[in-house]
Image 1 (tube, rainbow, N blue to C red):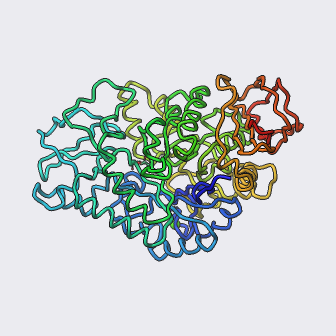
Image 2: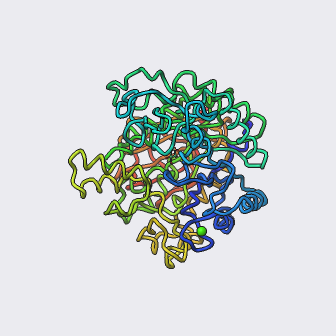
Image 3: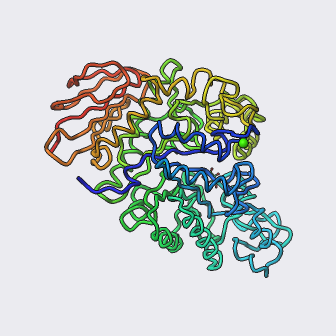
Length: 552
Ligand code: GLC
Ligand code: CA
């Protein structure tokens, strides 16, 4: 059996602390709230937690605008609470990885408050400045959150660069002093004993020559600050600090293709794995229905691109930035649990480390937002204004926002059917999804047929069958319009391959498969016979996992 590292064997669980569990009833989830739920997380069976940013922040971008890297945001608790959480998690054999946000800070960070005072302030060079006349930005590059990447600052009479909101100025990684401060801050956290990092927006560190026009490349509007040549120098500095510890590091790497990924996550890569965007970008369109062939292609390209030890995948279907997956697959209400299981099996059995986003294990769905006032996330407000400017009515604009906003994933976790779904005794800024009476943890944890139990089983299967961790990926029926079918190949002649078959649509699917010897049904979401015939019919969102005789 191939040797594996802890971060390859592990299953992760992403916690968005603000919406997870509120221990002191102020409407905001917090660190003691996470501690209370350690038994729940153990019951599910996950091995590590990724916490979204918990640092001091003005919260223009919900914690991704940090004003003190070494301080805990008071609404989440204290550093003592954090130390306690880390300790309790470790005692329960749960590791914790944090969010590392070093492409930018908040405009309220002391560095920026200094930097903008004058051009010869010692911190000026910590950010990216450009001369230019007010109202004439240095170039036409668009920021990811809308508008220009440039914002004029009156105090020093220059423009500064921001990949995201104007309150999130980008750090200047060309400054050796800045790099040293960042690396020291990272070391400080690693010495505390955290187990790794999810590294935010890391493909944006390097910017291209500012004289390049944005041009007409609408397919890649951010290409001039996404995985630009020269970024490797910065990433190598990070890698050298990480290399001193036994960490799980996962870079958020938009704009990095499967072909480029081996240099990021191969044996000499900067990170252990990266979050790719190809299968997710297909969702961010206004049309809601997912494009199944494109989706399959994106996933298999990444599986093949990092096969045979060329790298390792981070597997995910949801996070705090994207809508809920069951809603994306446009699932009829009576099939939600079935579809949730199909989605789970489909991505969990791929090669890589699976991440579960809070509430995904319960089948939480998008929120029926109807008014922009219900939305918290700032970039949806930008998007709404843009849609109105394009001539959409408020109602039309809200249809787009409802299906795409990040807030779909950020509503409070649904623990039980009591007031506010057991998240808090008071209302939180984002309302609880009205479906909480039906979809909640208490209703599922001891229910053998629930989605929660299905995730539990998948996690245990992965632990009991190393082939599900190391086995190579082999896609079958790549051109089928509904079925995603693949094998994970064992290393011996024995009964060792796994076969995954998932109907990703709400219609019956028919297909012919080469004969599979000794097929043993391991897990399914419909009651079915053990057998697998050459010519199969799968029900809407039907999913089955078989163990079959080895191809070898
Ligand atoms: C990442 C985060 C997102 C944030 C952005 C800027 O994409 O996941 O939530 O807005 O970076 O930090
Ligand atoms: Ca609280």
